[in-house]
Amino acid sequence: MFDLHDCNFKYNGTGLNVTTSITADNCSFIGNGAGISGWSNFNFTNCILDSNYSALSIYPTAVNMKNCQLNYNNIGLGFNASVFSSMLIDSSTFTHNNLAVYAPNGGSITNCDFNNNVWALGYTYDLFVDNCSIQFNELGIDAGSDVTVQNSDISNNLVGVGLGPITFGMVMPLVQNNYICNNTQYNVENKTDLNLTLASNCFCESDSTVIEEKIYDGYDDITRGLISYAIYDSSCSTILQYVNKSPTSVEEIYASQISLQPNPATNYCSIVTSNLAGQNGFINISDASGKTIYSQFINADRIDITDSFVAGIYHVSISADNNFIAHKKLVVLK
Image (tube, rainbow, N blue to C red; front, side, top):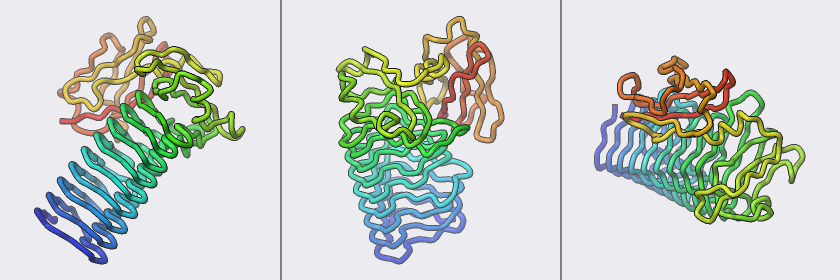
């Protein structure tokens, strides 16, 4: 195990090759071919990874990164294999990278800034993104299967959100409570043939014609699915009109209006909706292995997560009148 503090790795072919695990605090990896390569567990705090071809090119079982800066790399953080345990990236900045984060999966990216990259978040799947600033990139985020993107500012990119690749039977991405505004080419591009609903996101426009110009879907290419959405007032707090472009089921309407708050959570989580009253609502929460941690009828809007839950990503299924209506992700911090 490497335990590094106040170290500098500059202008090497590979700055550091890790075969077991590494903990690095206040270290710099600058101008290397690969700043860090290898596999197993990676823990970084207060580190700078600058002007490398690949800042991190890794085969991880777990990655934790906090308060780090990844700037001017060809690839900032590249995952060459699935994360088998957990990935937690928090309060870090990614600027002027060609590809800031490549194929992130199996964890969360929270409170991060992605600015002036070519691609900010590419080829994502099984990922939770919360409270991030994603601005001035050519591509903000490709939201693949089982990706949640919420409470984020996705603005002033060439393309804000790409939906896909996804095929029928995969878990759909959940894009909710974001500002998706003023992206130059498209606010949203549907790369699938599936109809999707983005009714809880604000596009910062009150004219449906203007909003449609920045949505690329089946209206532009008949092989793509349609995207339904809502028009909000200037404060992005009140819905003025729903624009339903495809037959929207009751389940889809429910799903677009259910949220878990706070998320990430520490001691409790609330189900925020007005739609389950009288609908025999039921909730099931399972961990990453599929084991059920919490399962019961919704008789209160508050879930106590102090005892049964450890830190990690949980999958939440919500049903009403025996019909599945929503799939959510819950991040628990301890």
